[in-house]
Length: 234
Ligand SMILES: C[S@@+](CC[C@H](N)C(=O)[O-])C[C@H]1O[C@@H](n2cnc3c(N)ncnc32)[C@H](O)[C@@H]1O
Image (cartoon, rainbow, N blue to C red; front, side):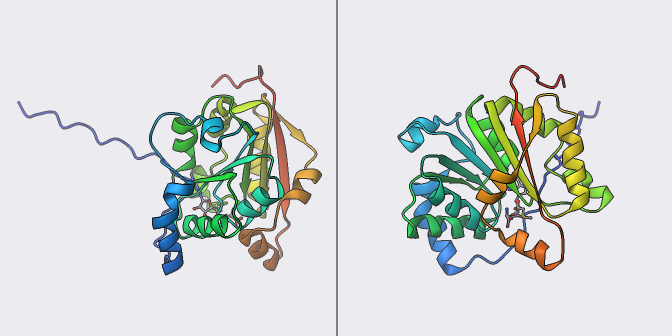
């Protein structure tokens, strides 16, 4: 009897495509020299943030920071918070590490990982006070909508990692994605929409925001508060 060939496991749908993107010499040096200072591994036990940052402080997680310009600016402007930035794109990770060294910021750690796996594997339940996602890839084609990071399953994961009363702040320049985000959050009883004006004024401009503005896209900030005890059933 022929051996049973194990059925190939379906690859999970990712919210990104790993682009080749040129890594400059300076970024490459930062990746090599500064990963031991600022980097967090993708694998391993859940991180004890208080031990990692050597202080208790609210934890802000930024997903998909791009070139990290907004990340270091927020960390400089909000020194009383600890930040973890997650990005898969190597040049951006190197760029952010360079900025952290230049501006002598000690309240940021950087993970070059898939944010979904990182949140699941390395962040503790009830540990995040705020999740910031600025200009997530909109995946405009209908057949790619499944790649959008904001999905009901992703919100279920956020519910387990956010502290009660924690926030999710998302900015987008793509109106159909904004409608999708509103729909997904409205269907999640654990989240309530909040006035976004304070968060909006605190958010530094990002590269993708500037691109959206050049294209004449309206920029929208959305803020949701997590209410423990109202978790989604599935
Ligand atoms: C459109 S760019 C926005 C970058 C930046 N926030 C800005 O506004 O300039 C989206 C970024 O999210 C990153 N990204 C998408 N899905 C991700 C994931 N699951 N984990 C980590 N990074 C992700 C991409 O690599 C990309 O750099």
